[in-house]
Image (cartoon, rainbow, N blue to C red; front, side):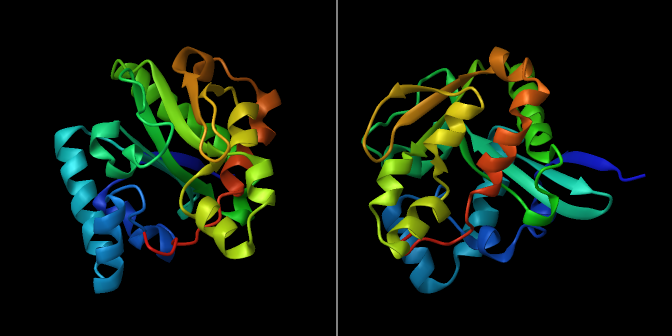
Length: 217
């Protein structure tokens, strides 16, 4: 029988993420510091330092999924004061009562089996226990992506910005519209009441995130 397990993201499990994810600091550093870390090739060290500090200051900031013993996917989230990049958008700031959904991915070989839904449910349960009311995310409208060239499209999506269509499909609503970076919100009571009819949409949401470290981040 195949076993599925969701565990908190730790410094040890960080090393199991796909290589680009382990060293991507798109969210963890502001744009200037991120570019500097990329030039110095020490982004992985900065990501580890960020995770260590976040765990000490706030607690769990991610969930990791396993199929049997194999890494299968993850989600990361944190309060906006711990996420410097959260202020670098026209639709900032994230609401005072919300935590920011940073990024997530289900490996292609595990997509379609409900793993994405499990991860989102685990995040919702964790945050609800901690008294958080909502999750917010910066999305990318599909029409905006269609107008971009291939390199910029990869930077937008690979830079941990989730497609707006998929966020809407899993219960998020737009709280501040924008042609490039709308901000969306999910009430955690809604997330905890999800049913199987949105499971496929969640899989598309997570499976669509291309793991590409954006230029200049």
